[in-house]
Length: 374
Image (cartoon, rainbow, N blue to C red; front, side, top):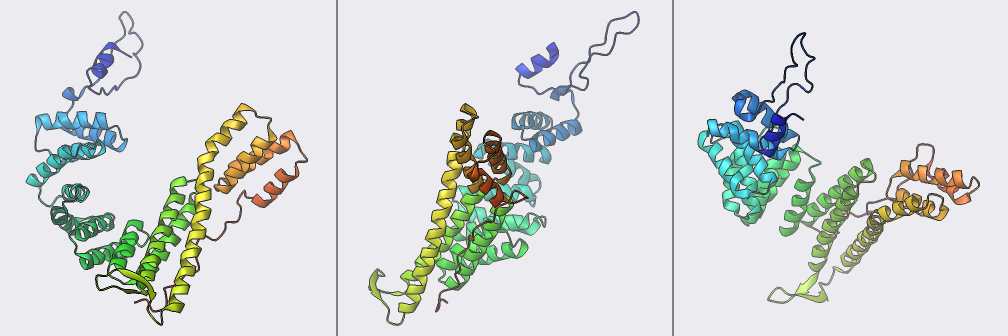
């Protein structure tokens, strides 16, 4: 690295080096030393291009440096303000992000990114009325591929303002634009439950389970995908629990008693059965999550002793139970290299099949809306 480049880095100024090697020496002369470009020597167009490239690459320090150089020359440059606002959000500098977005709105009041950014900030800060104002502006100018996400935030703001019906309407609009938007579905579950529309809440809860389960199957070995399935069941279980409490008599102050309303006995029994179904499926998911937790430990065991058949078997079974079928196959094949007639390894390989995939247990409860739910 040349001295000029080193000094630029030490000074905290990103350097763009256009030539990586010194050209060969000219006949009768020394080689030409190509100097790096620093932000101060670049045009606004070059700076914006590099800032955007750095932001997309998640090189936030570099993106910030370029944006600051642009703003030093043009303090109202909208593109640079937006880049720095997004960097500030990543750095959790909420005040700087808010100031940058407000500066953009001062120039372009209907800018989508500025209104959406401010709306999200105020939702997180639980200043819901202010959030709703900016998000409503963002909804009006949102690109088609961003509209559903904006409506989800708008629904959260409306819920925070205790406008539950309006929040549900916004969540439903988001779902109409993106039927697999899990945040929108979760809001429909929660808001429908709050409004006492249990049939709709249960349908949405079942859809949430189906979508998260499908995504988990499409991403084998993704522990976060399994966690999302678990949380989807949590949401559905909570709907049934809330519905179940409605089947009992209440005191004048609203306290639920242990006396069931006559005629609700059959519905109560069916609801209990559905809650148990969910609890059992969640128990299986908790075991799967525990297997994910134990995998690194099992991997260390086979690293410590690559000839330990029991360790390889344990490792392979954990990989299989977490849907990492190709890696599981390799573990069982390693056992056969050590002991070609190992019956359990042969059995496990047979269960994985030729493609390395094993059949999956059902992950959805056979549950419909409770009888009598409205």
